[in-house]
Length: 272
Image (tube, rainbow, N blue to C red; front, side, top):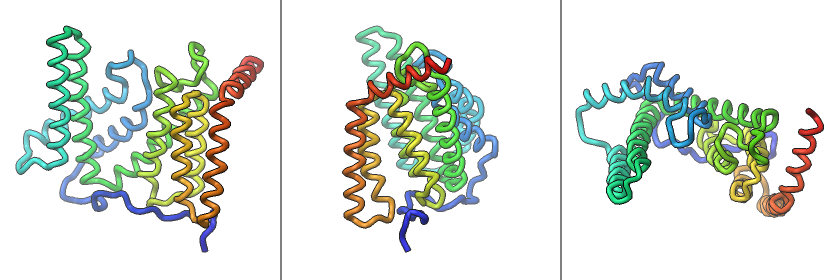
């Protein structure tokens, strides 16, 4: 019997089998991965430089990956080769630009691509050998990020901006983060099931995106919701009707976002 009281199982996105025993991953690596996902939206240092989450992964993950590389025997997997090719190409392009334009930021960007390749390899390795554990850690870490972002947006707004920024340097970054996080929620849902908890998370993410007043983020959520309704066990005509209503509501909110947000700011001023 299909209704909203039951969740609907989604197609499996798992590229690997459940946790394997072929490789043992130390718990501190799994915990550092959890903390990395949890604190990845937190910006403390100037934008473009390493942030707290990066230091966590460098301190614990870099020595581990270095030991793996030193003891590795066998052919290079295609996924790692593809990541290395992309990072290497970006490194070459940035250094060629550095030679012509003499901008030191281009040389520093090359180092960032190297670091991103390291993160890519570590995440692939963890998910390959401990997929279910990594999925659970990712899911709960993502929930944690949503909780503290909505708290920051609601109760600790940045006084230098008229739009919500959360823990990010600017509103647009926060808006794009809500879209990425919504997709991550779908990919890490326990047993690939959409239920009321996930629906609540989607609503909170939409609220955060709305508070950023980023029209691109709000429009992205409109598409996200239009696609998401097909995850629920509704009859086809109801899906079309719900999608139409959501589209009208979001379009209206895009046009009236300034009015609503100004009312919110006025409420914040009176509550102080």
